[in-house]
Length: 393
Image (cartoon, rainbow, N blue to C red; front, side):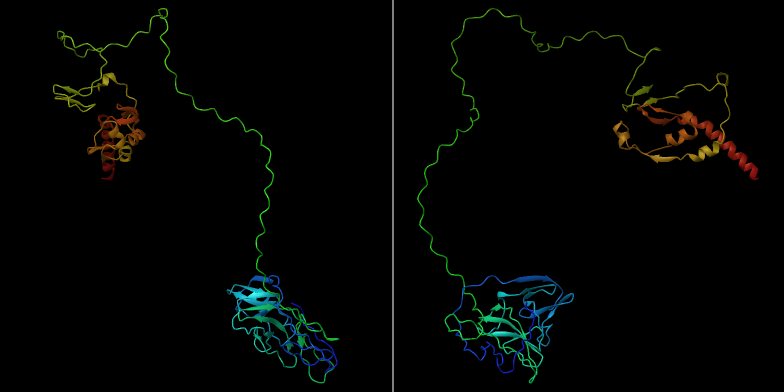
């Protein structure tokens, strides 16, 4: 917006400013012109700034921010424009041109910046000494206005060497211009006229030349087979064909005579699902059942070279743990049934007495314990325990 100016003149020559600003004493003001064509779009600015502004208030720029304008001082009356919308964190203002969104305006009235209420606009210009007469807008109906950028004039005390100029009247389109009167302000542009009727259709253009031949299309689908031709003459005898597939199996022949009884020999290498000695086999894979003792291996001193006593037997026994268990999913997949049993860990036993741990018969990647060979370890552990008890006594 334009800065405020102080006009210097001899008191009385130009008279006090009216709301429409009569021309100076030297010439009569021309009549108001008719409404002109519609003007250009207003200069609208959106600003992100915390505020409490309302639509219809005038604002000016401060150092680092914005504030409501007031016509009691030149700096506060140097307005940026009029607020048309505000959300508290952003606001939009129109600097000049046509704007809408107002309420309660008096059609065709000139509005000035108030010198008593910050941001307010009034149809009565300020009259206090030192205040600024600052035109802001011309109402167009009750909700629209033309925002103007006219300079302000400061009211000085009576008897001073300086007065204030009256505002020029609106420029009349037909009124005769006074001999020395200043030009009136231009009238508001009228609205855009209606669109003219469509022109007649032009004549058809000449036909264009033929385009270049298109590329060859894809090959069509194969046609159906033709009728079968007549039978040709018999050809020469071909070579012998490949042997045909076997015929169906013949019926079962008569049973042969019973063979000699089978059995194991000292040189047999045999595998059975289950074994029963003097009793029937259980049918459980890997199980051996017998009605008497199973005697194996040897224990005779005459067949042994002793390599030493089992040391720290009690500590080794104490490192083992007896527990209840049943076959897990992996063991069940190998054929074992999930029944409650007791035992010890082959891995724990292998750490203290690896001589009694062997690969499991079901699969050599697993381990098993030869439980009968735990007896020597238990014997030595009992002897060590007895010695400790004697020492305590």
